[in-house]
Amino acid sequence: MNVTDWNAIADAYSEIDDPEGRAVLIFVQEKLTTLQSKRLLDYGGGDGKFAVLCAETLPLQEIVTYDPAPRMTSLARSPRDRDNKGNSVRNI
Image 1 (cartoon, rainbow, N blue to C red):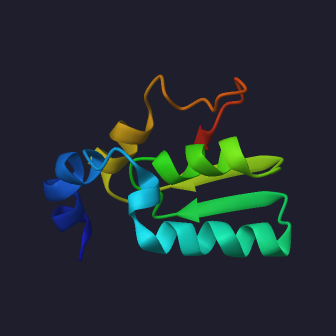
Image 2 (image 1 turned 135 degrees about the horizontal axis):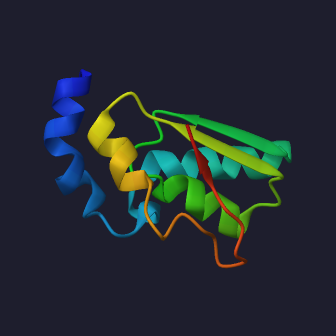
């Protein structure tokens, strides 16, 4: 898929409320847990829900998300870009 495709489906993709419903994200989260990583660069971070999930569940010091699709980035930049501890998740 290209940026135009992702822009077209961004809203529908973001309607999947539970990032745990995205199997690949759970796989990556498990690997991050095993590796005990302190930083996460989420390239192709989409709507940012995975970054927030990681901020809430992993002892990460820094999370940076990036997505080349402007609509995905705009969905990621919302008030919910804070984990349940009040930490911000930075989008670039």
